[in-house]
Image (cartoon, rainbow, N blue to C red; front, side, top):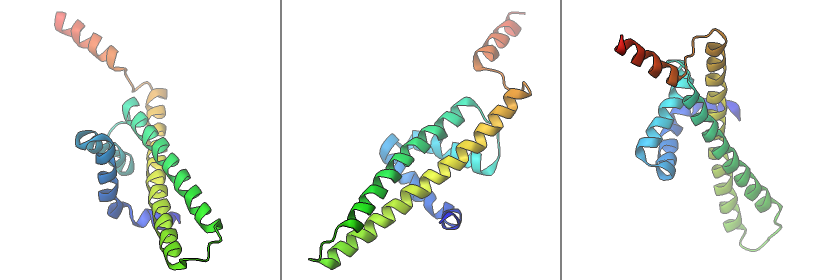
Length: 144
């Protein structure tokens, strides 16, 4: 299952972008995808907002995957013999929905942990400076 997710990252980018645009709008969706690509590519410093963005995406798609799995299990447990072709088609649709939600969840989960480790490492070596301190330092420098 995980190999399937790894191989289809790029193919799922379009589906993920469409889903995020539907939920958040184009600008926010692009920002979320940029944060996810930053985590997967290992480029750029990790900051709080990057970690928080991927954490919220992880929560969103975990819930979607859990709901899709419940619907899939319920459809498989149903012992309806009538219209078996329709039931099989619905089961295939539910399986695809679960795989899609789970793949999105795993991408956000992995990306979150990558950025979290980077942010904690930066914090431990004191490379991280909060934004309010940067603003204070620039006003002090400008005043001098």
